[in-house]
Length: 182
Image 1 (cartoon, rainbow, N blue to C red):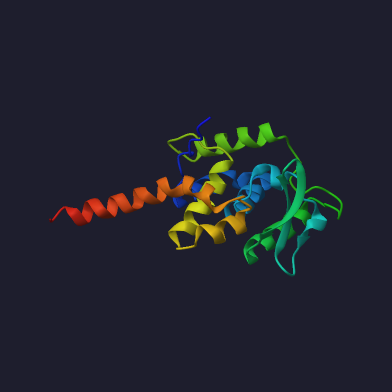
Image 2 (tube, helix red, strand yellow):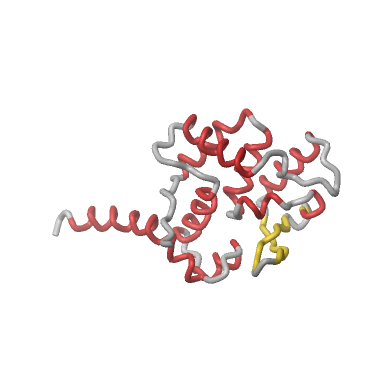
């Protein structure tokens, strides 16, 4: 089966989705963490309070590799670590509690499409768009595929070639502008 990249969301679209989710503490926190760490939905689902080190700003996620879960680090920005800490306090979560298991996968996927619609996003949006956005932004900032694959838990840097299409569209626009006067 041929994989097709999701239509990428721009920074403005992602920000509007987050803004539209601002009325729901759970979704706003989950979507903000996803925007800044680029992990898959299933990786967040297994995160417990004890998996977050606020001093080092690291969150351990569970990544499925060869039918076994392994722990992988996700780096948290200072703002996201603060947001997570406040979310945990507001919801009175204890050390052994899951942080993002409040609702099912299906409910999360439904919520992201509803918030995207509310935000006026003109294309279909799924949770994976946050991962796609994260990787695309790192490519645009000049990160190597090897660096990005280590940061996001991709098994191979070659799988990131999949994200080239959205970066290529940026180059295409610049090229068309530059070629106008030839």
